[in-house]
Structure formats: C-alpha cells, structure tokens
Image (tube, rainbow, N blue to C red):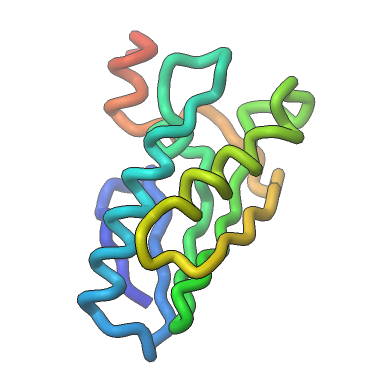
Length: 124
C-alpha cells in the first residue's frame, strides 16, 4: 500500500504490490486529476477536495475500485454521481475498468474538506 497524497483529508491510494511503481504513479496522478473534474452541482468544489472520495485501490491489472460518499444520503444526484466518477476515471489512459461503490459510513461532514475546498466555499 502506498500513499501518494499526504493531506489528511485526501484518501490513500492503494495499489496491489505487484503493480509497477511507475504504473502506480502515472495511474494515481491521472485518477486524482479525473476525480477533480467531477463536481457536486450544488457545491462549487470538486468531489476530491470535498472529501467525498474515501478509498481508491488500483489492482495489478489496472482495474480501479473507488469508495465514495455524498454530502447527504438524500442528495438529488445520488444515482448519477457514481456514473460521473466512473466515466471520469475510466477515461484515464491505462485504466482497465472502474467500480464505484457508494458508502455512507463514516458519514461525510465538513471536516473532510481540504483547505482548497474551504477557500472555494469561503468556509473558514
């Protein structure tokens, strides 16, 4: 397991030990960039900086598993957002496939937001 982002509110990106380090670096950078293109339509910050991504795992065949949540279980885009995440990450060169799983434990709260999201939302 390797951590690529040391900010406390960002998920650890885990890799199968058989995945080559250079593949891991390239894939993880592309995955984070792709996640940052997905926005909650009601909040002007991307889902990665909001802390909605709980886990990213890359296996040795370059298949990606993602656990994510929503700001609230009754979010109006609950059915659509996982598809947006899947499509964004699937477009990363080298990704073989994506499985997005919606989780609500632990529940999301504002403490999961990065400083970047706090600045964007003026929430200091």
